Length: 67
Image (cartoon, rainbow, N blue to C red; front, top):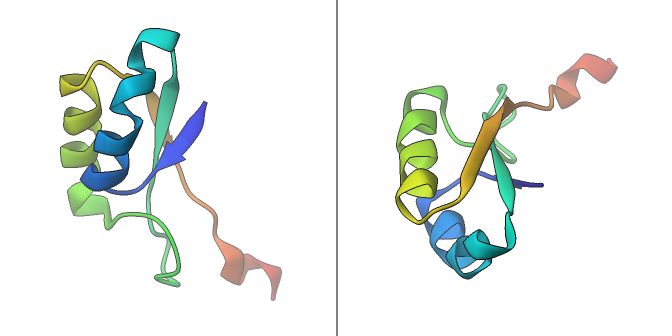
């Protein structure tokens, strides 16, 4: 399993679809360091499905929760 946060990253992983690679879409939780804006998560997931990747869900990392 690997996290993705763009259509471009999904396209680069497409050759691994036959190997059973599962992906989770990373959603930006506010620090804008990684993840896709929530409004774009469905488009990234759809792109993954279109290239044959198994979409396993979404995740986020709220780094600001440390403080």
